[in-house]
Amino acid sequence: MRKVDKPWGYELIWAETDHYLGKILVINSGMRLSKQYHKLKEETVYVLEGTLLNYLNNDNVEKYAVGQVLHINPGQVHRFGALENRYVKLIEVSTNYLDDVIRLEDDFNR
Figure 1 (tube, rainbow, N blue to C red):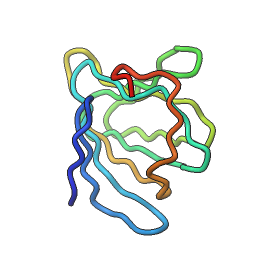
Figure 2 (spheres, rainbow, N blue to C red):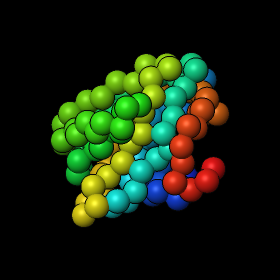
Figure 3 (cartoon, rainbow, N blue to C red):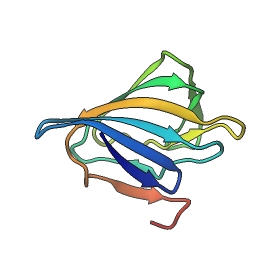
């Protein structure tokens, strides 16, 4: 397993092939990832702990509880985050396009 520290928490990559990638994401309390989309990457997430927030393109927020699943298609704008008082842990399985990230907004100026 490989740990990748991120400004919002970290990822644990537990499976990596030429065709797919499996990782566990931990998003710290009150943090969120970039508002982004992917040209090719397709991903499915499963919430393990906490509440996953998904900020949509129009800034509405969807909430996903433990045991819920969210699928992201190529071109779909999304931004994952955690509540102010609780981290969120999720499993993500995706196609293996690690560099396929088009950031629209980012709290960390990346």
